[in-house]
Length: 384
Image 1 (cartoon, rainbow, N blue to C red):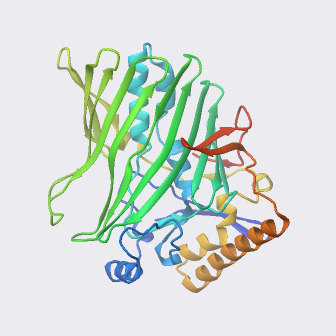
Image 2 (image 1 turned 135 degrees about the vertical axis):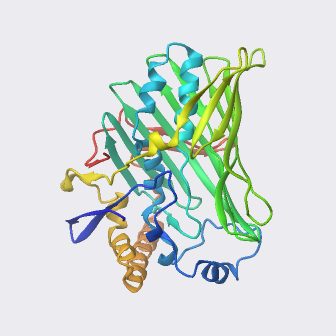
């Protein structure tokens, strides 16, 4: 059962929904007549097409924004993996904990439905314990998202800047995610840089969704590196196979010596084997980390920004949850038309949109973002 919490604010609903968890996504989020509708959706899309401007009808939308999905991957966990990262006694211990935390940001994807494409300047601001998380959509075309999170008690900071690039390949959609994520353990003077896997949506011969690709986690101050590979070893017809596999290694890049081997399933357990003595242990248990995730609560209605995802899309989210598709279509159209009006107004005045929370640049190395403020303030939305 999907939990929904709503408040009225300036004639617009603020809708908070149950976070996506490690279990297969709730049936309420699945579009009816799935295969038939998907084929009709892509019948006029050519292979190789860029899907960043592709607009899904509300029937294919999750009742939440992509910003909320990114945020949930950081603040929706049942155990505090970030504290474990900070409390590791040695650089190797800390890297192992960072690997476990990185895996925890991977969540199952429901094929056939997708979150809303965030509007320019949209934000998502949530607190979980001492961790305050802020996301902002810093570009609409192409879609680029920035994240800043701080935990002053643990002295931890996160900075992300990433750009999904979905393309239709005829029998599948592959969404490569460009950009980097940084996790800073300031007490130890360590910065860990990492990328994230790509999303693969298969349409033929059997529909399905999974994460794939290589993830590298590198500590900039040491020579320690973790190399992870996400893959789904399914048969041609999708029957059997080994799904949601993760394999990899932790090595000292200065000597190229492999210290540990990583093996398991990111939606179940992941083990670490010491290459010196062959001893193995579980470093990540998805059931433990992702159990009993609760819908966030609204602590301060007046403190919610007009740009907050739950505010911007509140009317649409409620219509989707109520399966009122006509109202959903109208609500989505209202948001889109308002964005076109604002863009036209800026162009007529010769104005350029500027991020409120990040210094943004786009150069040969790609999109870069730097938080304007040193720390993220407490949020009016609280994750439980």
